[in-house]
Amino acid sequence: MLSHLKNVALTVVAIGMLSQFAIHDAEARYGGRQYYSSWSYQPARSYHYTRYYYKPVTTATSYSYHYCISYPSQPRYVYYYNPVSRQYWGRYDLDGTEGAQYSLLAEKDRKKNLEDIPESAFPAPAAMPQIPGSKDGVAIEPIKEKPGDEPKDLPVAK
Image 1 (cartoon, one colour):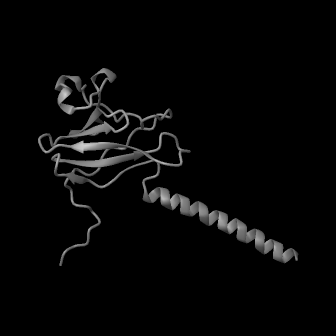
Image 2: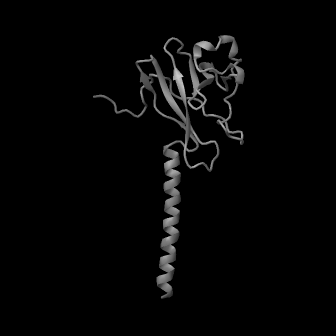
Image 3: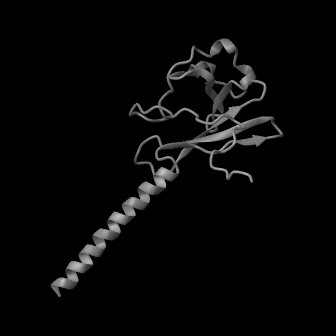
């Protein structure tokens, strides 16, 4: 009887450990606290976009997202757009100096339409801002792939 209880206890512990590995594996696959989707093209509006998924707090059970939009007329920049407030709130300079690539717009300069934001409203690029809604100081991960880049995991053509 004691041997049977010991086996049951070991099984329960093993299942618990395996479920923790599965959770960590899923977080790694989906980027953990933050990640970007692959780029898509919106032909009706002539732009590329990706979604930036994030968790404001590490204990969040689901992701929030913002859009990152790249216009062919301005290929140097990726604009961050909040679909809840329906405003552009900053831009990332793909050609900027590493560590100083993000221009965070002042609240008064955030607009629904990019055309309504004068170039002078964008401050000099600086470090990436905090994850939206977070209080722990963790910065947004910069975009690693430019719009139109081929995925790195495609098979090689023969």
